[in-house]
Image (cartoon, rainbow, N blue to C red; front, side):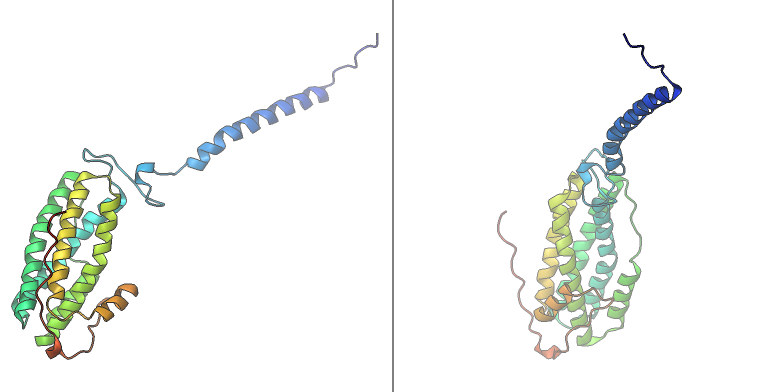
Length: 241
């Protein structure tokens, strides 16, 4: 029987190295899935990178929901004063009526959004942002039929842009309070779109170009003869759901 070769230190360390390597590989295999999920948000708020969703008694509240609540408040902070200007400065009954709709609609919608923000613990702004202040300044400086044209063009463009935002939030939100607010905002925005179009000052070709273009601080209304504007009766809301 041949004697076994002596076990050397090199052999011991070689075997130990294989064990350590195997353990390390196992650890990596276990940790890689954890690392790959690090920083991911709750699937309930999967609206893109950086989304933060919190739990509320009314359902999950995402960053997109909070942003929508803020935008509803901001809309009222400048569109209500713009409507008040139209009531005072509009040269036609249709423009003044559109202004009254904006005042009434945003007075009610603002009360709704403040209630929602209080329940959700979401802070709200108390004045228009810089861009909205520029819009108000442009309307304040306009006179006569130039005001009518600028009011209709600017407010119709703003409502067209927010209309799609409301639809997206309403379709995706999991929060019941935000859903109710989106329903209210949708009805309000659609009413305002109708009465603004009823002024006869909305150029739909220019509107389509502006909606497709990068937003500008103060959209310039089309150069048309103000006397050619023909007020029309707003289209009635559909009956039933």
